[in-house]
Length: 281
Image 1 (tube, rainbow, N blue to C red):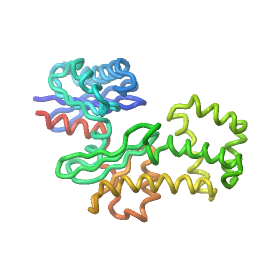
Image 2 (image 1 turned 45 degrees about the vertical axis):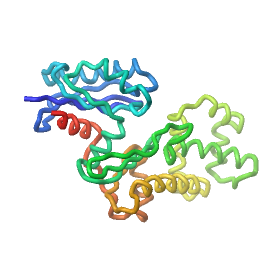
Image 3 (image 1 turned 45 degrees about the horizontal axis):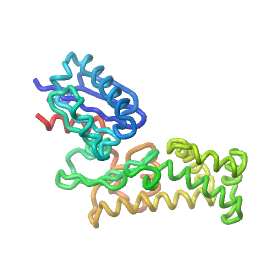
Image 4 (image 1 turned 90 degrees about the vertical axis):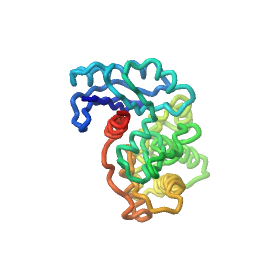
């Protein structure tokens, strides 16, 4: 009986599961961050820890497993090749974490998946083929993401301080809470995307309360998300799944635009990795 390993690894953690050919889960494991571009050795340790725990619970040797690994950073040059030579599995296929998330959300059906959390990336599946947009990181990409929403908030606060944008209760509160514009600039110099993304819930709450600056930020974010979705739809009317921490917010916000095309995800990225691993048999 063949055994299959699925791994879903990103910047915050790594999950693994071993299943049999019927899809029954026999073992699970977890590990730390698994971005194979930003921290290769750390990611490898997380992957092996998660896979080892899942294999042990399933009573299986890792060397008997056919594995699909969906990992952050796998789209960057050389990262997947570096990892492939260090894996102990019988067979292995390395994909980005976005691909396994799309497969988990859509199954084998055609459709579009919008993954929006700290970062953002978009994918379409047509006839079994997958095409991705975005995923280029905070500095040059991640439009519509939590990190970009938080950055837009701080930029708007500085513009309001300079009299170049309307002062709103939200922007005034941001300036006061940070301790003035100089403190915001200092924060921006040392902040990582997750730090900016922690400001996003504040924007959502202020938008719900009617703050004009928050509304403008969220309207711009929704427009960026819709532009990527429309590009992948390419005039079709494919089912659309929203994933990630901000997925439900954009599903709600864009419901008037996409209506009945919006569907709940069928499963998780780990489900997608396991389904792909069974396809290696």
